[in-house]
Length: 194
Image (cartoon, rainbow, N blue to C red; front, side, top):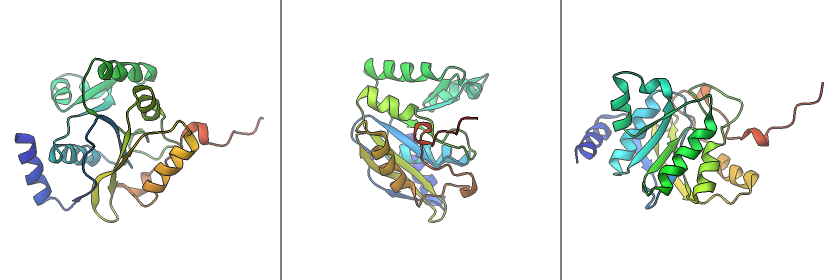
């Protein structure tokens, strides 16, 4: 109740507009992109709370140190040890298999800077857990943010990523200069041998 009230106040005062589709009615991997600013976190919470979604999100381990740890966990955070990313997928799958029901927010473009490609963890989690992806977005050009379509990945990586690229083609993020094109490392051309 308090979260929904806070989100209503936020959306009534914000210069951003909540747009897009309704929240999915089942667990999904919620892609947060383009991830170009710390403001993305505030927008993500405001979207989730307005839609009354129970969300979990992945954050670097250092965010959970000291006094911040209990707050971050209360807000749905799951600490990630970046030196062993494979453990993250296993932990999330374990939570889903144990019966936890939540939307998992993942920012596949990684940190808030232009990167050469997206990380594939969202794809692996969705496929291995048998849950759909929901395309969440932030678009500074229209000052809108919200949720896009929810769909099952097919396992045809290029086709699935083409669908994702098409959706994000006109989404700029808070800081457009830091936007990363939705492309997995496996889709990048091979570097020529030296």
